[in-house]
Image (cartoon, rainbow, N blue to C red):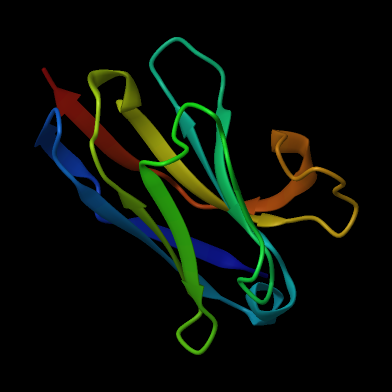
Length: 125
């Protein structure tokens, strides 16, 4: 089985930066695309960013494009999310996930097989 452990969340002022990490165990990480999702209080979990197995392909939600950067280090079984110019609306729990082989767009929750427990990000105004 795959285990994912997110870290790096915290409280930051608007305009600040955070770097999230997601450490994965298991061989699936080295064979799969990865994604970051987030969930604000009272809202559904939403796509934030994805990265292909090699790291050559990345994609972002419009709401984070130009501010967030996803990357991965396959030697360390870790995927990162660098978040700059944070806004109060970025507040939420951030989850990393392992993409399913059955996925097509990898922008939907049901296209991911394994999830971490999440890390809280709070951006104050």
